[in-house]
Length: 342
Ligand code: KG4
Ligand code: ZN
Image 1 (cartoon, rainbow, N blue to C red):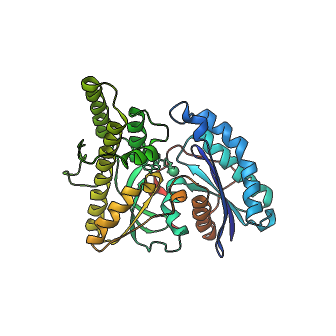
Image 2: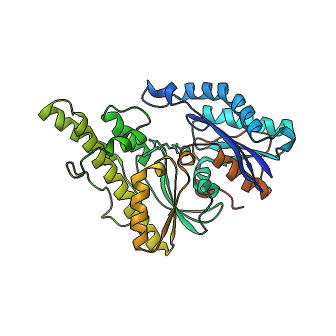
Image 3: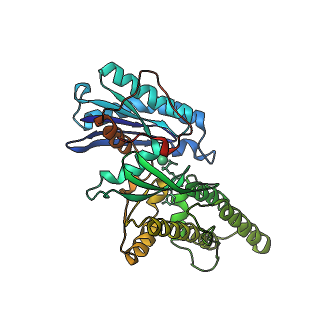
C-alpha cells in the first residue's frame, strides 16, 4: 500500500510518500521558523496561512520525487491532532479532499503516535514491547507500548514540556526560536559545574516530570548575574545553557531508567523534537548499557515534525482497515491512550 502523508500541526509543512513494500519513497519539509522568529514563537494564524501556501507545491514535488501519480496512491494520512486547530485544518481538509477526489481511504493520525513510530522508519527498528519517552514542544510523556495503538501512560509533565522549557530558557538567554537546538549548540562551549541547576522531582517516586521550576531557576540565575556583573557575557550564557541542558537531560535519563526497571522492559524509544538532542542520546546510551537495555531513535530530521512519520503511522492504520468518514475532524487535545489498537 502506498500512502501520502501530510503534517501541518504546528510550524512545519511536512509531506511524504511511504510504501508498505518499498519503504519511504520521498519526503519534503518546509519550515516556517523564519516566519515566526521575529515574534519569538509560533503565531497560529500566520502558521495556517503559510501551510495553505506551501502544501500543494510540496505534495506535487513529493509525488514527482516518488515517481507516483494519483493512481499509484492507495490512501492519504494527515495529522488530525493534537496541535493548532487552524494549522491542522489545512492538512486535514487537503488530505481528506484528496482521498475523496482520488477515491481512496483517508486516515487522521495522532501527531504523537507519528513521533512514537518514527524510529520504525530506520534500518534497525525497535522491537515491541518498549518504553517510549515522548519529548516535544508540547509533550513530555513516558508510555508503555505493547503494539501500535496499545499505549499505557506511565508518567507525564505536570507543567511545561521539555521542549517548551528549552524554548523558554533560550529566550532568557536572548537566543532565537526554537530554543532547543540553540541551547544545545551553546552548551557545547559551556563549562560544566560553574552553575548547578536542580533535578526536579527525581527524589520523588513515580514517573511524572516538572520543568517549570527549571525555567524559574534560569530566570533567577540570569537576573542574579545581571545585578552583580551586568549583562551576561557569551561564556556565562554558554555556562548557563550547559547547566540547564545537563539538568533536563539527567532528569529525563533518571525517569527513563526508572520506567524500564519498573516494567522490566529492556527497550527504550525516544521521539519528538528533544530526542534530536545529542547529549540526551549519548547519556541514555551510557546509562542504559549499564542495565543491559538499549535506546532507539529516528534520524535527526525525523525527530522533529515531518511528513514521513505521519505517512508511516497512517499506512499501518489504513492497512488494518481503519479510515475516516467524509466529515473532517481535528482535535487540539487528544490523549494518546484513547487511540484504538490496530
Ligand atoms: O516534535 P517537535 O518538532 O514539535 C512538537 O511536536 O512540539 O518538537 C519541537 C521542540 C522544540 O521545543 C525544540 O526547541 C525542541 O523540540 N528541540 C530540541 C532540539 N531540537 C529540537 N530540544 C533540545 N535539543 C535539540 N537538539
Ligand atoms: Zn511534533
